[in-house]
Length: 315
Image: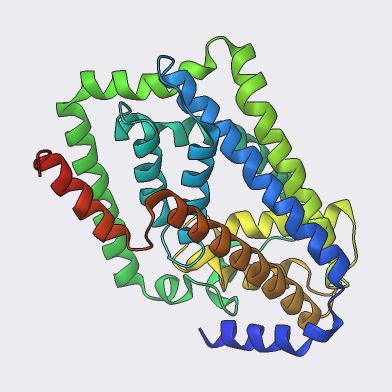
C-alpha cells in the first residue's frame, strides 16, 4: 500500500506538467470504447434470446454499472451488478446464460491478449516468476513469500472448483442448455465475426489509441511498442485484481517493463495518472447508469424492494 501512496504522490507532483488536450482525447476514446464493448455484449445476449427485444441502451447501462463498481471494488464485484441490471433488461434470461456470455466475449479478448503477451515475451522485458515477489508494489508479494499461506489458498481453490464441478454435474443437462444459449451467436461464424468480433476489434483499437494519447499527455515516448507494453502491464495486473483495477501491481509491472528507458518518476506519473483518470470516468459513468436505471445508488435496498414486490404483487 505504501508503494501505491508513493506513486500517487509522484503523480500529483507532476500534475502541472500534464498536457490537457491529448488527455481529453484519451478520455473521449475510452468512452467510445465502452460503447463498442457493450454493443458486442448486447449482440451476444440478443442472439441467445432471439424472441426478446434487447435494447442496447439497457445493456450499455448494465455494462457501465459493472465497470463503475469494478473501478472501486476489488475482485470484480461489479460483475454481479452488471448481470443483475442485464437481467432486469431481459427478464426471461437466466443468470447462467448471462454469465456464460462472458465466455463468448472472452474468446476474442483472450486471443488478442495472448498475441500481445507473446510479442512482449519476444522482447524479454517481462519479469520471470522468481522475481515477482521482489517487485515493489506487487499485490501478491506477501502471498508468494509465505509458502504455507500459498498452499492453503491453493487447497481452498481446489475445493471450491471441486464443489463447483459437483454442482454442475448434478444439473448438467439444464446447465449445458443454458450455457449453449450464450454461444448461439457463433452460429454461423459470419454472424459472430460481424456482430461480436468486429465490435471487440474496435474496442481493442480504441484501447491502443487511448494509451497512445495518455502517453502524449504525460510526455512518455509514443511508439507502437510502448503502447503494446502498457497494454500488457494492464492485462497482467487485472488477471486477478485483489485491488480495484489491479492498482499497485500495474505500477510494479510498468516500472519493471520500462526500466532503463524512461525515468521511474515519469512512469509512475503516467501509470497512476492514466489509472486515476480512467477510474474517475468509469465511476462517474457507472454510477450515473446505476442511478438512471435503478433510481437509487442503494443496490441492496433496491434488490430487497424488488423481492418484496414479487412476493406480494397485490401489495
